[in-house]
Image: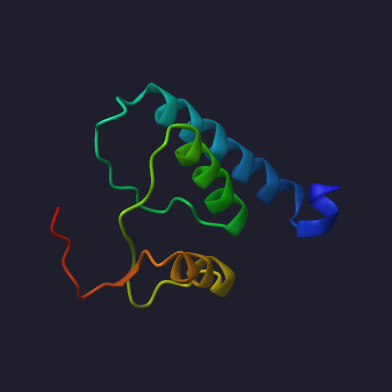
Length: 96
């Protein structure tokens, strides 16, 4: 069902599943109070939603998401983070 909805090729699905597996292992092994910066993940709307579920489970949330100019990201992914209010322009800085 998931593959029919997303219409991804089997190779793209396998690559996405491998990315989620690797990120799941990292996420659950990290200390809860440790900050992090991710590059190239999440790359799809599905990965973003799964990542948000993980964050919710640990009572954590994203502070900011930057999208660098020139990246060819899915509009749905950018819109998702814009709607959450965490999307920042690449020219802005982040103060903790």
